[in-house]
Structure formats: C-alpha cells, structure tokens
Length: 96
Image (cartoon, rainbow, N blue to C red):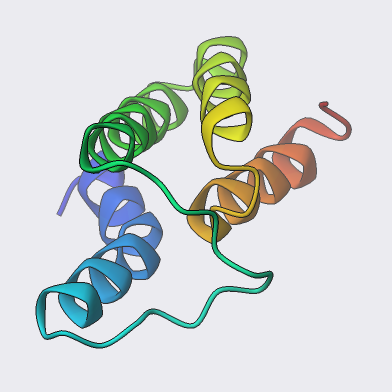
C-alpha cells in the first residue's frame, strides 16, 4: 500500500463513521454541539474535507489548512477537520 493510501485510510474513518451513523438515522457523537447545516453545506464541508486530506497526503500543508479554514467558517464543530488540523500542527511544528 502506498503512503498516500495509508494516510487516507488513517484520516477518513472519523468522517465515514459520522456519515454512516447519520444514514442509519442515528447521530454522530460530536465533540461540541453540532451546528445545523443545510444539506448543501454538509456536502460542501465533506468535499472540502476530502480536498484537505488530499492536500495533506500530497504534503501541501498550506492548501490543507486553507480547506480546513473554509470548513471552520461553515461548521466550526466539525471534528474530523479539527483532528486533521491537529495532525498538521504536529507534523509541521506549529500551524494555525
């Protein structure tokens, strides 16, 4: 397995677990109270997260943080984005 594939498998489970719970009629357990998002905003957040993960796996931390900033403006309580931002801080020795 490539490094990129391994990173994607490592980063996507929080997102997938939340999506699966929502499809099953349950609720994902957020770290903070979940913001009420329109279906369009929820899809936008998901797309931005996938782009952030892709940028991260390409070692483009600036782009990844840009996508995460966009997510924070839409849904500041989105846990997968917060977790990815923390990973970027750890590997970069700082970050936003």
